Image (cartoon, rainbow, N blue to C red; front, side, top):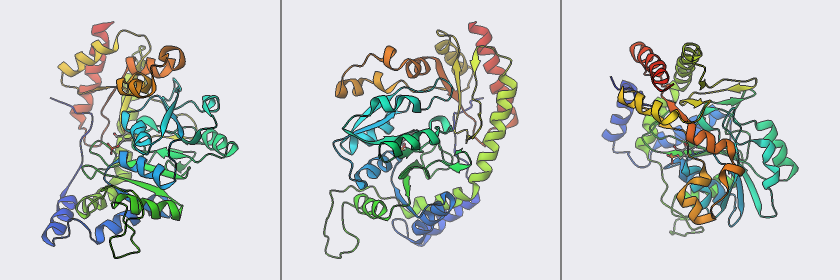
Length: 371
Ligand SMILES: Cc1ncc(COP(=O)(O)O)c(C=O)c1O
């Protein structure tokens, strides 16, 4: 048996949708693309959705469309590189904030000490599908008159106080890559209520070309970040299933929490008041250092795929090359601890009863073997 950390869930609806647009030759542009953007906007309750070809591109496009360049953007230390990359691609510097040891999200209480005259925005990342405390983030943003871009690559369907992530700030940035809640293979989108941001995002994704003109006039420096009609056809079928996927993930997570809670060494995910998690993955942090690598090796050998939790951004070699070496253990104790002592396993809707039982049993064995 080999249990992956994530896998897509498709049925005949996806196959038929894709087959139809292929047969009709509408693989690049087409009505499905407009329908998908509208369906996403309706789901999120925002005015505009602009699809792009990845979640990383969505972050870059968000900052560029907002005109934020050569500035500092406050973000989390615990995320994968694309979060910071999107900020850097737009010509900005990510400024890192340590995370909460409980929910692994940027610790809103520490944001203000990083605000300088160069700060132009705050980008919380709802990591591992758990919402940031958006009341605190938005209050600080309002106090300092800073826009907020939410990195929701891992948090489609996640809510804070009953409101979907990606709808608090000025822009929400989402990923549709293969281990996300719904997938179109690769892809992403921005969600916003701001007409000007949406207008500029459309231009930037299409080489910088003005949609109002027919003479190949480029009003911005742009990219080819276009999302295809083929992907949209797949996405329309996936979106219909989103609520069901979330329900199944949450049921899997509830069961895993219940059946792993007898292992005292593990800090399991836990929903606090106002939080609603999508369980894009199932993160586990070891309460004591020195066990994580051996547990991960044991699981891998037994066919339970797992991945380390993200190395603190300040420890990433490329970040250090660009922005210098920071005293990470002192400045970012929680992010560095989590990066070295945490891992995640799958929680996806296609896990079978047999796989769930096997994974839970194997995690018990792994901890017992390294105690
Ligand atoms: C938190 C976070 N931000 C951004 C991204 C980038 O998304 P993509 O892979 O679609 O570029 C990812 C992707 O895994 C992510 O997990």
